[in-house]
Length: 145
Image 1 (tube, rainbow, N blue to C red):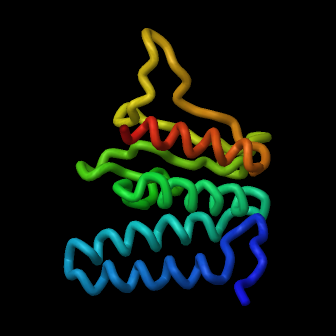
Image 2: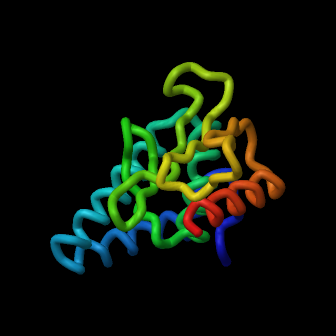
């Protein structure tokens, strides 16, 4: 029977990520680099305070599920997700990083969020909910379209 989901990664999700890292390492040098990026992102998430970690874990799942072409890595010590050229498209900044009252989901210039002459490139995150998940998924899908 699968373990109940909490606000963070389930045991099954943790096991799947470890398996994926091993698969990448087995692919050789290129795969090993991807595995290192994934592990670095997961380690950065693990170091966060519990509330930030729970948000970062859900963001990680949303991005890796809905934008599998983005590779996890760290960027300035934050979990980030890069395109095939290695350019960061989206990142997560925990509230504890700079003692902010909210975490941030940010997009870099490689993201395809353009909307006229002005558009948002970062979003405050306080709590995870189905509504927030839907918004994050839509932004991520747009960013990689």
